[in-house]
Image (cartoon, rainbow, N blue to C red; front, side, top):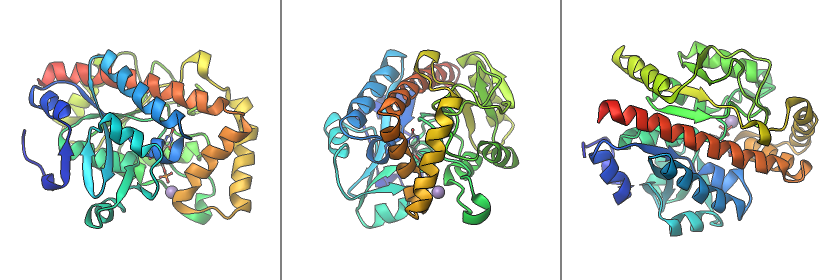
Length: 310
Ligand code: PSU
Ligand code: MN
């Protein structure tokens, strides 16, 4: 395999290494969703199911996390299960990653940190649930997820179900446009809102097939334009919670967060678990369904890309 910066901090799983060496399709998966996004045991079963969805769509999964300061690209089943209940696991974004490495800490990687590690190891496609974005009330808090700047910098294609509807979606899209990130609606004209298939926002680019997404990735690279691409893939119809049903839950969660003075990194996990409780678990079912749906599409895009590169 080609060498890359900071390589001695990485442990790439043998199966992932072999796939990369043969120009095979690999899909990166994040781990914050396991440690901070879902309760146990659904976090572990979902992580394992998502890996099998990637496999059944022709690619090798590589879940990324930091264990005792080592950046793991591809977790074993034991590591994944351990992560599902482990304590003292930091939520790592770009700003936290070097500390977790230097201090031999455990950490789960957000979209931003997963993109960095994936890119270093040579992975080009990454599936997640929903990216972080511009938070509502940004005029007061300045809370903008580092996921957005990472998309501007790092050449990885991220497949998501849009941004979580707890965010300020119009500002999230504006920010991505400013930072030069192509935002693709996969078979949709509207930016999906995570639990719901549609927001009222038009999506800048509509693409119909994994091959056409691979064409876009290739053209961006050929033009020497840095940074990633965001592919927004709506949750399947039978699993969605329509926006008008979500609005009340979202507003309730935001108010609770304000009452509890929740700030910084804790905001997203707090809102997700509050919504899970108030929807009686329905939001979790939707979350699980959309991640699997994204994993399948990511594997098909990775396969289309591998065919032309490999
Ligand atoms: N999507 C989910 N659940 C999650 C996240 C995304 O379905 O837990 C995580 C991702 O790791 C994302 C992070 O990068 O939330 C964003 O956190 P913040 O808003 O603090 O940047
Ligand atoms: Mn934040």
